[in-house]
Length: 84
Image (cartoon, rainbow, N blue to C red):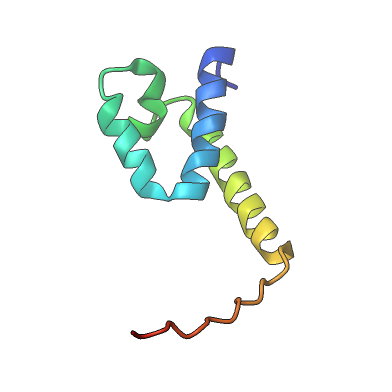
């Protein structure tokens, strides 16, 4: 388990990556390339990487479950535009 300051980063990032896709993680990695708190993204052997992957998987499952539970919305009828 990561220390609290890293855990918070991991938890929030996992939720956002699940929502926004892996491109978001890549952007964060590029922006935080010199920040050791983000080593879990950079190095596969980082001790906090398994925790990140677990949180990411849980967030992705939660997002999938939320999408499956959401009622389908009916499209509003489109009105014809008036041509003058």
